[in-house]
Image (cartoon, rainbow over all chains, first blue to last red; front, side, top):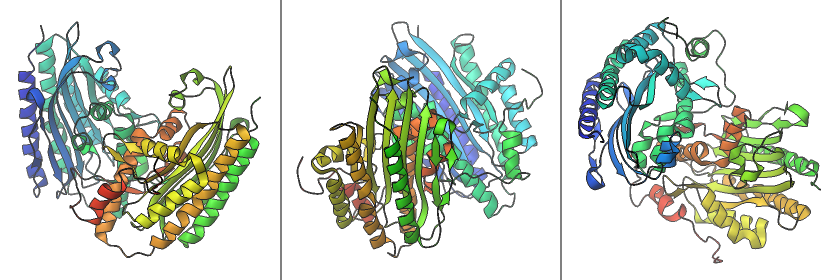
Length: 299
Length: 299
């Protein structure tokens, strides 16, 4: 028997509200634009987008419940026998592009699929990851401690999965300092897998908010802003050229403005640019982007 | 017998020099950074990149002669039996991102493949296309007249192919006002196909230069600049998410800075943005991006 999507949907919507309500006072100046877009057969999309804030340059916290008759290929690369079957998907997906270059960009996603195949199937997926422009060991430690608290014994495997997923092969470079990532998750059955997903969702704000608040008033100038915009080019490359979620979103004909709400507000590309050796910018490459065992727990 | 790649390579290098030499005085202030990067077995890459010019914000005019042992899948989607075979490819690929929003961005590409399959195979491909931020009928007419002069009786089919290729399905929107595009071209045998490719290459400057020079001193302000940067977001979307050439370049392990030299210097994304009805920006969508029979010659 298929599990009921309703409690998952309710949790994702509650979490969306909670995160939106927490981010608005951090920004202090600008609110989220709220839309409720009902779809056919009870589907629902709730985009929440904040632009041009005082501290948040752009944030998108999206909830979507989609009901489809034919699962697109990008969603089933690892499960090709599921392509073409009816499905339901509920997801919360968020991205925060802060204004201050010392505050990292973050991304989090939780999703639940039910596929109405001959042999019915469901799974959870999700995680959160951090993309700093300037590295701070203190921030990385806090982030990964929260990630471990959320995922317990699964942390080492899901941390590795995150490093592998948020990777730009053409740059041979991780997108950021990772976090946790899981997919096709049925561990312990529906109730346990749902509880696990709630633990990940509930740890996002405790993981991100202290880092944001600690760095948001750090003075910066043109140099730091230029570096932030340049590194955001990598973010655009990952989202458009590599990310499975974006591919799935675009292929499945989802509302394009929702799918691409994660794009950076401004990004730059410079030809053959490398930071000067010995600078804080160079240390991002040398000390933070290569996968590290932040918690010193081995694998 | 396989045709000789040497004269094609020589023509592409000559054309690269000619275009670089023509663009530098148009900019007037900044020159191209010139690199010659030899590869294994006689391969050669000649990136030519201009950044931060007075009139050209960024231009990349690239020549590449690559020699590979295994053709990557993205290059052979329509010819899957060729995947994995040895190949040689010579190509010139250029993009110009002007500073003035009234000057259109342009892209041109000419390429020649030899695939060392069980049954050896070669073909040409190429074309040029124009991406205005503000539409001018006079410019569109001139551009397409030159395109027709270059391609003669083939113009209607190649114009249609261009509209189809430079299309963003997720936006249901053409990238620009098109031009000509051809691929798998063996028409009339090697000598004729090479002559055809030279005609396309030789028409690029006569097609683009007058438009650039006519618009480069038009006064503009923040509104036009904002619109240009927003529309450049579409360019980034096309290059990273859709373009076969970029996919091929990244998959084949080509030097990433050369492949992505085509990226806009700055691009922005705004959530759910639409230009005001009745404005010049709205007219781009209504009057210029939908495919049009500019020369009134039917199909």
